Picture (cartoon, rainbow, N blue to C red):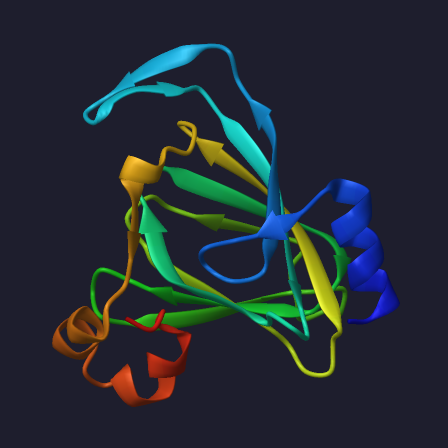
Length: 162
């Protein structure tokens, strides 16, 4: 593991994330809001890190909106599967054609991939209403092929095995 990634993992107390990469929840708002799925914290926040050992965050979606802020390293590519069947790639990084911030609406499939030759990307995320595992879903290969057949071959590597 590169020194920068190891330092962030130790400094922030990051643990392996089920999507890939590393994470730690850093905030849960004490206020609750009603949602169709039940009460949720008004907002939650995590630190999320991809590195060379775990360079991919597998396709998943949440009911809530997620705001992503690049904190260190990068660039990192985000692949978004839109409801109309289109695919959009957004790169978080420091170059003029890259962004420091990304908003992903609830219900949109997303994957993140550490951009070559970066050795890490540390992103902070804010979820509104707050994250709850019952609002989270991993993309399957069957859904990828059924809903995004034009892109299934190029994006299958970003789907969690099993």
